Image 1 (tube, helix red, strand yellow):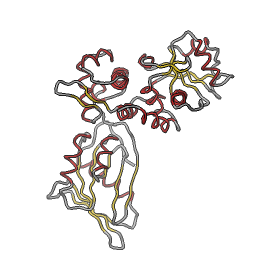
Image 2 (cartoon, rainbow, N blue to C red; image 1 turned 30 degrees about the vertical axis):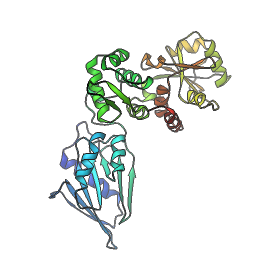
Image 3 (cartoon, rainbow, N blue to C red; image 1 turned 90 degrees about the vertical axis):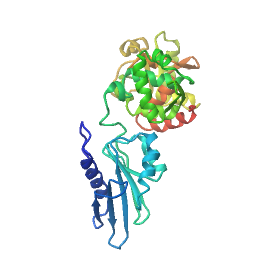
Image 4 (cartoon, rainbow, N blue to C red; image 1 turned 180 degrees about the vertical axis):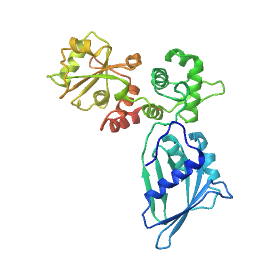
Length: 345
């Protein structure tokens, strides 16, 4: 079990912890040996031996930080080493970085619990998913996609087609151009946006950006919820919303079902500006158990931007719906995957 700390550990601690994690996943009767002083591009070498005589050498590179755009160079350097397998260890490796490493045949271990190592002989497959959020993230203003400012910027990038200028994005996100530039630099390093020489955004990986946003914007934590019950069920609620003179936007599974022309789920989630007042206007009694309506006080008014209508009912923007689904219990994330597949990159 790896321990989380506020400050990322030193390289020697990082290597030792990562190697301990691999060793703990191997059969007890297998043996291992570690060399940390190597004469090649690796920072350590782990040799794994079985009682039957099979053995494999794993070359390990330690990286304090590894953005997706730096993976090709790091992988090429590590693969100059004569070894049976290759492993990158780091305090934290984002999902996109891990995908890039696997595509180049490189395994990984990070201290957030993400582990992948595959060898042919001896046959080894270690595959564990840990945290998707960096426990050693930098300051919120420049490194985090959590909070209203970052969320408004993500929505601005996802909801319309590029190109986008920095000042244009700053205006839409209601923040300053310096903040936008810093956050765009992070997204560019993670290969979620591409910019020209003047700094304008030319391309956006919309599904990838929403997935990345959802690792920090957490639907169930970001929005205050009031649980209610509508005796008439989901369709009755949608009829009431159609006639209600209040700000609202349906989201989550109900909106995904409408987009996919599928049956409505048993529970409807809906953003409103004031859950208690909306419950009174809609004649929805609050309940502790048996709720089929979730009225949400939004983390930011951006949830009411770029809405669309179907049969007179307003729904949140597809980007917001997808992020909310990714932060919902199952089958929300699976339904988010289907929706993201229909969003244009």
